[in-house]
Image (cartoon, rainbow, N blue to C red; front, side):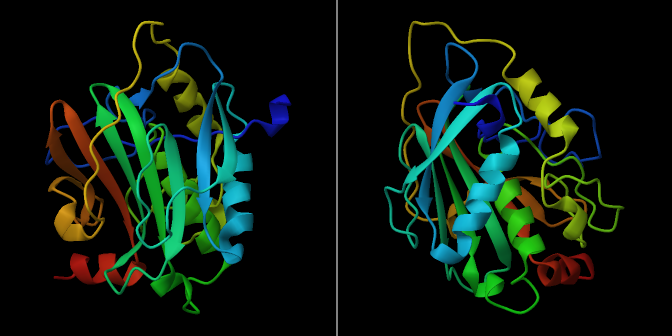
Length: 260
């Protein structure tokens, strides 16, 4: 694959103890979770389960992440239904559907086994993206880019919606226009996350899958965003396996929560 066509996917998780507030940081990876591989760049499949409305945004986000030197991904035929968006071992499935008036624009989930990411999903909530406020290229690019980023080891660079936009999709912001794509530090952080290489003995064991992705099934909230609304959840699946869910809420949802 040509270097400039390298499509990269990253994961966003934050290295912090439960209850610790996030501040903008130069290091925005989460713990030591990463995809198992024996060399860089490595290739990862993105399952396309999105409608034609979303296809261009999926391709844009994939192309944006391609600037990384450590990861290659291929957008390929999806292997699940958009509504269920079931995780498939060794892949990330990307989905869109009307998931309901539940307050979230998008969620990303990763299943981990030991220190490795085993599988991931991204869900874009058309209940909101079909409204005038969120049916814009800027909002679609920001949320798609950010949720894909979460499935590979990256965290947010900032979680205060009122702060000046940082010019990265890995930033919570009330203004999506400057934040539609990764920035230089996102690529630098990816290089740090994937600097070490895994041994040739062993592979990532597929983690168990949870039944659905509604808030009640996300497990325990382990971190709040800058507005005090839950941002990351952890579900212990046993046998060293866990599921982490990252949430980007609608402006209305985080604003109402902030004023409660």
